[in-house]
Every structure is written in structure tokens, then in C-alpha cells.
Amino acid sequence: MPKKKGSRSAKSSSTPGKAKLSMLAQIVSSYKPEKIGNTYVKETLEELEKQIKYQEKPLNDLIKIQSSLDKKRYQALDSKEVKNRGAAFSAWLLKHAPKSHLNEKFAFKWGGLAEGSGVVALKPLKKHEKFIQIPRSVMLTSTQASQSAVGKVLMKDETFGTMPNLMLAVHVMFESLNPNSKHRAYLDVLPRIFSLPLFFSAEDLKNLKGSPTYYDALKIQKQTLRQYVMTTKLLDTRVMTALKLPQFTFRDFRWAVGVVMTRQNRIPSKTDPNKHVLALIPGWDFCNFRDGELTTQFNPEEGVDASESFTMHDVKEGNQIFIYYGNRPNSKLFLFSGFVADDHKSDFVEVLFSNQQADPDLAKIRRILLINRRLKEVAQPFRIYNDGKASKACMTWVRLCSCNKEEASIALKAKTPLIEKLTERNEKDANILLVKNLEKALKGYDTSIEDDKKLLQDENITPNMGLAIRLRLREKIALVQCLERSKKVSAGSESESKTPSS
Image (cartoon, rainbow, N blue to C red; front, top):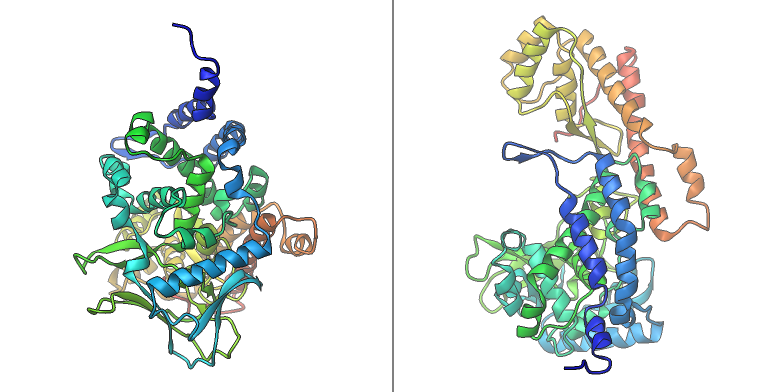
């Protein structure tokens, strides 16, 4: 029987990029980390770089081919359309969350702020005054995701069963593709592009070289592609047809991952308050970050069942209302929220420390001291805070790695896991070891502090490049301050002052 004219093109257009997707699936399956027993060996930075480079071209080709499906979804909106969507969302929130305090204590501002959009006060607010209340009924949750028709299919897979964030991302993706979604107005005001490393080009990622965050950024890109390929396999043509699901692209999937990554919060489970579920909280999630205190809580009381947030300080009418995202360093804010805070008291850079032992007998004693405190000799990460101080755990490590037999005897009798100054000799040697590790970390960067400051003045750098440079600049400033402090102590010209405990 002859084929109908145009049947081939119709079939190919229904699955754009099928050949490229198949190629990417082969690439993803070729990434097989070494395994010792039941434990996978962590990939090296060099291996990750090769993998990202290898998948870059076929992935870009797939995105280009799939643009026939999603081009309109990722077109930039003009200011008028942004405001129209914002007005529609405000109307939606007023209807579904009448006690939210919208138009009473706060309003949304869709542009004109340094952060883009945000939440502003409609009247003077006192410190710790409740300004927003969002009920569970308007949230998008991982429970909804797992109980949906798509969720019931995906939950059969072990990965989805253990990753509620991934399940929620797929749910958000299909809700965004559903014109009749209850959350249509909310999803329409969310950014279509995020300043997350997940969305960075290979060229942008290079600006993270030397930063401990570089490895994590590469890992996120690799994992997201793997999860996308896995999702397309689980939701094959048969399942998509049976559930009447719309076609989705890699950009749709990546966007949804970005939404969940930047907006997910833990709230108590409705059925079991001792357990938590992930949730997107419409409206509240437009509050921007400022360093301060956690002032958001979930109120499970009958008749409330809502997320409530309180001001961190007095807020004048017309000013933006900020919230604190928790005790996360800039590296985490950068990776999962897409920004770097210049004035951030809780910031730190995490550096991998290592030590080569020369004396085997002494090395054995030191190893026992470290193991007793759940510390390792090599590849041990420690925090260096933004004021240039090493954490107490870090100082304990360098002191134990530098102790002689007499000092080891003192440490063995210590009743606390953290070790303060043992002897003058030990303190000097400990700081010498600290200096070696800090110098090694700084050598990993391709640029100096002055280089970065000059680059940030260049009008030609992209916003993503600027973010990466700002992050590595703050890391280097902390490392250099700690290095200078440690050099003074190792030279005997300064005593080590008290340091943070973690």
C-alpha cells in the first residue's frame, strides 16, 4: 500500500531531534564511573570537563532542532507583556489566596528593581510583622507530582522515587505546557531563563576554573542531561500517547529544573507532619535575598495551613521587602539561586586540604587522632570564612597533622573533638601546613584579585561571566586574607585568634 503523501515529514516533525536524542543517550550511557565494590569512585575534574565538552555540540544541535517546538516559549517578553502577566498573576493570587495580604501590605513590582522583579511594601511595616501568607492549596508540591498520572508512571523508577525535586520538576514542566493548568497565571510570570550555571555556555563555565564551585557546576549540567534522557525513555511514545501528554524539549525540561532549583522549599506533609515535602510557594518566591535572619515558617494550624513570612526589620512604604534564604554560602546561592551576594556574613569558600606524612610511626598516631574526630588525611574539605579565618575544624586538622609525639599525647587526652592551640611549635607548623594548602588553592585560579576587579569593569563581559568572576573574586579575597594571617602566625608574629566552629 503506497504511503500517503507527506506522511514521512509528519512523522519526523512529531519527534524533532530523535536522531540527536539517540546520540545523546549513547553519550550519557558511556559515562560509567569506576566502581570499587559497591562504591562509585568520584569523577575527576578533568573527566567531567571532557564529558561536558563531548556532549556540548550534539546538545546544542538538539536544542536548535527542537526550537521548532519551543521557540515561542523562550522569546523575550516586552515590558508591557511582563506587566500584563504580572497583573493576571496578582488577580489569580487574590482569588485563590485572599488572606495573602496582597494589595494590603505588599504588592509585586515587575521590573525596575536591581534584581528585576520583587515584592514591595504598600505601607510602613514594623520589624517581625507578618507581611505575606500563602496557603498550601495554591502551592505546587512533590506530593501532587508523585500522585499525578505522569508521577505514577515515573515513580516506578528508582531514581524518581528517591528524587522528589526531579519529580516536581517534571510536574512543573507539564503544568507549564498545559494551557488549562490551575497554576497557569503563576507559571506565566516565572523567568524563562535563569542565571544559573545550569544555563551557562561552555565559555561561561570556563570563568569558574580554579573555584571549588567549578566541579559542581559541571556536575549539574551533566546530571541534568542524564535526567532528561532518562525521562524521555520512561515517557516513550506509548506512554505519551496514552496519557495525552504534550511534547517537551530539553529546554522545557531544563527550565523546569531551574524553577525547582531556585524556588523549592520544604514544608510539613499534610498527612504526616513529621515528614516534609517539596513545594513551590507562589508569590512568596518573588521576595529577593538580603543577609539577615530566617523569618519564614509554616503554620499547620487548622484553618491556616500556610507559609508565613515576617519582615527582618522595619520597612518603609514603597521599599522592597527582603527575606533571608538561610545559612548558605555564595557558592550555593550561585549554583542554586543564580546570584552572588557581596555583603554576606555567612559566606565561606570550601577548600580541599591534604597532607603528606614523612614519618610512618608518627603518621600512624596522627591518623588515629584524625579518625577519632572523623577527619581524613587527604581530600578533606574545610571552610575558609569571608573574614579570612579558617574554621575550628580546619585548625584542628592542621594541628593534628603537625603534632609530634608529645603533642599527640596531649591531643589524645583532650575531651573535646576540636583542638585548640597545643604548643607554640605546633601552632607554627600547623600554620605552615595551612599556608601550603591555601597557596595550592590559589594557584588553581587563572587570574589574580586585581585581574578580576579589572574584568568586572569591562562592559563587554556577559552577565553570566560577571557572576562567575564575582564569585571567584570573593573566594580569592577570603583565601588571601587567611593566607596572610597564617603566614604571620607561622613566622611567630601573630597568635591565631578564635575561629568559627564548623
